Image: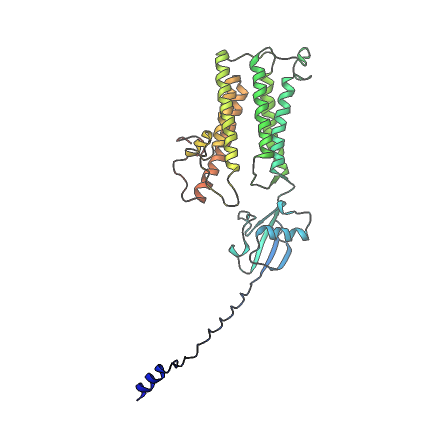
Length: 339
């Protein structure tokens, strides 16, 4: 009977009853995360005296942020002058390290030490380069009180002496321009006292070389013009290579650090074999300058520079291996397959 009735409704055009649609349940609101603030205590490393207590420091604050807060209370200690560490015997913390990622509780103690007056690295580089440039020209033009009075403001009769002056000046002018327009300096500052050590090394070395190369009794290289030309070609080739590497490193866009690879520029292809080819080309330039001038002070400076650049290159190579798991294993620090 029910079936007949249902059929009758269908034939009469009546629609079957619709079930009421269920409304979607509103999503429960997310509870706001509770921020756990830190309490930071700054203690003098030497005296262990409590200098400052910072309350309600956000967990995402960096070490640089903490230095800035400390600077507000102690204006004489600007952030670049501060060194903060978690333990008196531990290394200083980097500015970019985040508070909540450090091995501390919600109450953290930082040990402060004063690094002394600071200078920007750009200023240091300019001082290192301008000094040798000016000093060398003083010897080249034979200013008074350098050689015998009869040689004051005279010029050498040897073409290689003039060529050496042009190469030496070109090298340091190039370094000045690179400091101003090419280099992206990662280090912020360095202690003021270090500039005397750095400048003393470069300035004294330049004066020592210039004194002998521009000396009135200077003798030309043993193999003559052929040796001079060979040294000149090596010098120019390596100078171009050094500049090419600096430009390639400049084009690695921050903030993400990347592995430097060769570009279309053939001078950058050495990246396949060396981690720090800028030092490789720098060494080659001074070897070429040594061959061209055949001067013992230049050879000594080249040897010392090679030792120092090897230390820097090895440190950079180790940091690359530590930072990048897929870093090319074929690369050496400064000399392909050797060092």
